[in-house]
Length: 294
Image (cartoon, rainbow, N blue to C red):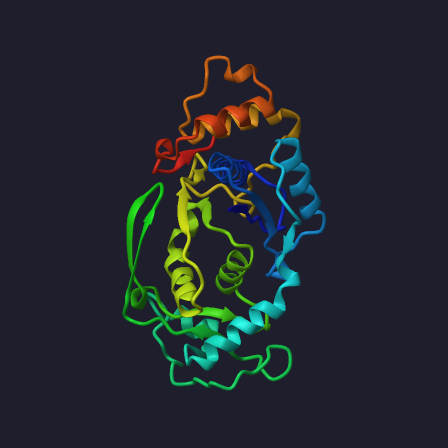
């Protein structure tokens, strides 16, 4: 079971389309389903009209999802339940460190507030002081996994630091939401950008703490700007995908993913390109290093 999980903070660009194509083709090549989840847990970043723009772009590119679309804003109850379990297990603590204080600290969060634990759950909307976040306490263990593209990975949780599960504004953090949603949707394979590689050990730690199933990960090369090497993103001025050039966009994405397309590839339709890609998918051909935007 694969998935694509964009945030509705703007239209899709070539980097996000690359992730959509790779996750779709990978899921279908393994005879699986491809789910769509709108990751709107950070309500402040939602841009009006983005959801419809994303759906329209996917449909133009033949990337049709299976089942109902999931929205994180509908899932607060499941996040609350997970947070309550973690608190009862004494794996969560209140943190009142200000941003100014944290900026003075080099490296990961230093564990300043670790003593502020409680097994009594405090619902986010009623009693949580505005000056507090909730953090997951990372132990000394190593998190090892094999990325399907990048190979063996090993991280020391203590070196990454304790991470936020619920923010000062009472919104749930991405790390918690994505782990719970993947488990609830029975996702087994995550294909996404390499910018999220460093989040993976935190997410695996949460899976283990909550006794959730493990899953496979594949982290794709990022597309970067030619002039400064920055990741192509909405924040760095990435252009929206041109839906009128859908077949060419799919062709370019598959080429960037290292797939050996047939000689007549540029003359194929969107549907023909996707069928070919599913039949000939080779994840081991995907580059391990960043791609330069054309």
